[in-house]
Amino acid sequence: MLNVLIVFSFILAGAGVGFYGVDFLPETALRQVTNLEGLSFVSAGFGALIGCGLGLTVQTSYRRLERQIRDMPADKLLSRAIGLLIGLLIANLMLAPLFLLPIPSEFGFIKPLTAVLGSVIFAVSGMNLADTHGRALLRLINPDSVESMLLVEGTLKPCATKVLDTSCIIDGRIEGLLDTGFLEGQLLVPQFVLQELQNVADASNDQKRIRGRRGLDILNRIRDSYPSRVVINALDYEDISTVDAKLVKLAQELNATLLTNDYNLNKVASLQQVDVLNINDLAQAIRPTYLPGDDLDLKILKQGKEPSQGVGYLNDGTMVVVEDGKAYIGGELCVVVTGALQTSAGRMIFARPKTSVVPS
Image 1: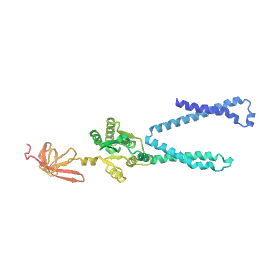
Image 2: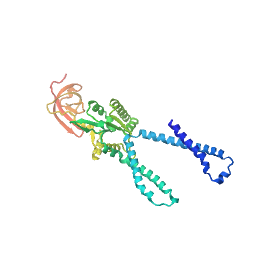
Image 3: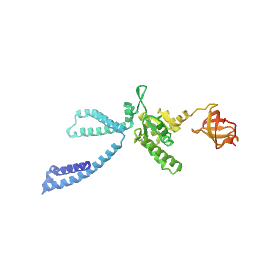
Image 4: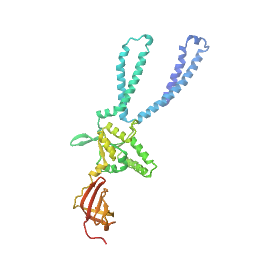
């Protein structure tokens, strides 16, 4: 209905301009016209055609603008509106003295032309500045939403939004963290991270394709389980080429915490004073500590470097080297921890069988 109304309004306006515009033709031209009324109707018809073309153009542009505004994030829309208002205000304040200047009547068009051009220039500049710095300003004004507040020690304290990167989604442990309730606050998945996940899922390499599809499945599951907490953000930075740099920029603007497994991204974000939660660091911190004399129930899987050694693994992947454990390969036994070694590749535990009886 609105499309028809827009086009019809322009057709009507064009027909009206064409019909009554004949009266403004020079008298010398009108003397040569034998049927002035017929000329008015012909002019109205041409005006209606031109109005129809303009109406279709305006209607298409309006619908395109409507779709852009509908898909635009709320913070970007608000910051652009504020930038537009500030730009127009500055334009009016700066251009007001222009109308006080004495200008000859033949140059009277300069004042309104300058006012229109100045308003357009300052309005566009205000929106461009809002795109660059507006969201950061809004974040300073309202750093955290009401939904991201937790009651701690009788006072409300903000709980920062978590921005997810591709590595932590593919890793999958975030699903367990959410299920156990150890991860609070809103989880934000940028559109460019989704695009990277899709590119990995469409890769020609089988391993990459499996990892990408696994990440998409995990993301769908946590979004179905926590629809009010997992948010897809359409914000993108076309002037930034790498996904890691976009993540750091987004976390800075939103004053959010970056959730990742990427060691290099962790270091780069920390250098730029962005809070980072590394799931690998968390897993390392909560690994159980075994002291000499502690007992372990372990399945021996293979032979160690020494002929008499057997090797097993804890649930977190920690290698356990068992002296005199070769005879127990394929079976389970209780072992006693004798020592531990922390290396750059991880932690290694040494143990010996608690019983000296060798299975037959």
